[in-house]
Image (cartoon, rainbow, N blue to C red; front, side, top):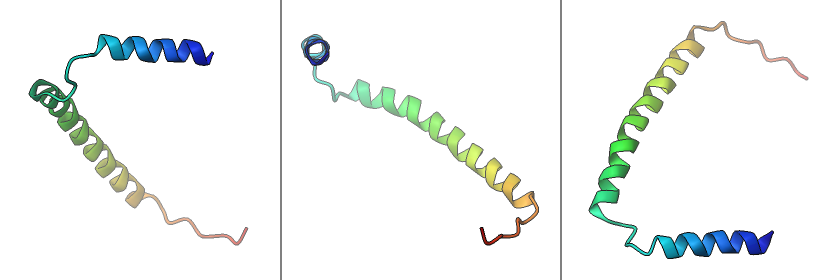
Length: 62
């Protein structure tokens, strides 16, 4: 199993011999990360509003 994983890892590293940190890679990252961050922020805001509307749960000493 370890030999198979090593084979895949080395094969991928040989295939990706290009420089990984380029302006194009940065642009792709920001193109995908910025909308995702906006969606996460909106979802957290909706969840916080929803939790605020719920009745407060009494804490029971379990």
